[in-house]
Image 1 (tube, helix red, strand yellow):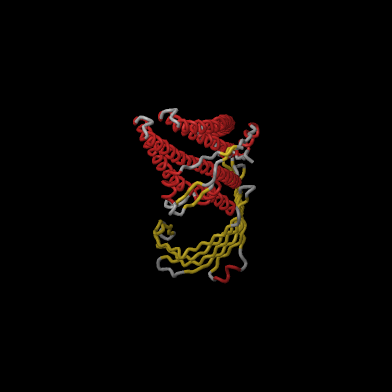
Image 2: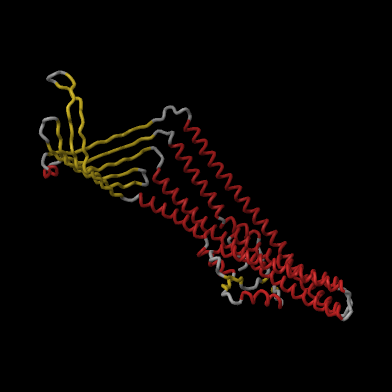
Length: 482
């Protein structure tokens, strides 16, 4: 196991850390950053609200399949108008003023029957009524009615069962989308953390480069004063020092901007000072390609959701085709009722109220509308199946691609980590040779540039390797590092 470590220079500590030492900083590890994002970020809260919406929608549909009770009152129902009636005395139609004032209460108990798509109801109503017409005296009567009613569709599509199944499917899709959102958050935070860490290390490298350039310039200046080198060599190293300071300032600005972006991503206040904590360690992760593909096909929400979309499309086909078939409706009613001028009497010796109606609906001609709608629904079903198949192939391709990236990044890390050691040794030797007067300032400058580039390239390779591993976890939801 190789540890990736770059020491900060003296100038870095004096110019950077000293300016921030008075500010309280929150040191964030990758794990703590992910934990914060999963608790506070906009993305996770948005996903949680979407999931809650689907859960409440399913609960509402399930509650709708239980007994419901509704109570209605007319307080009052009043009418007064002219009605045309036949007068047998005059032998003609005449208009009479007719009116009534009615107070009524109605109570409904409804129980849906999921397996048959029917509804069983208990209905009760009571009203008192005042009737008046012209000069006739006002009459008052009362009425009560209590009945049991069954409303049962026949031969048709079971909408109650279908709506319940759709709600369950949509909830499962939301749950998987929520898990997908969490994995995306984990990856995005991981990627942003590594980018922030890389910016921090680039700032350290830039500061160390300033330190090295300062040492080189001081050495050159002393040698110039002693008449050992020409002024042009000293000026060259002075230019290199100015360039190194400029690079460090640019790196510091970039680091500050990335910190603000990172705080926004994980849900921290912008005025809070943060610092990425920990060292990124290079460790070899062995990945089995077959296991990676199998894990992706098993765990990816897109795969399961595409299968659920097939089921939703199948229900749509069945519902559309049912609209063009013969359907029936059976309505059966049994109850008791009573009308009387006295309120107490409407509950005594009631009369029976019974009835049965069977309605048969036969589609005869609709200009082929239902067939076309059914063909459209079936085409959507085939599209869902095609999408599911293409989704599976896309996932397989993604895994193959990310595994190739992991192999390439691993090879780069191993090669470039060695190049840092070689470049560091070469720089140390060149520095001693420059002090001894065996090489020019230009040769030293070139060797220092090689060292800086080697460190930056090695850092980028390590970050790329870690990001490809994080991408593999996002695409398989399987932690090969463990």
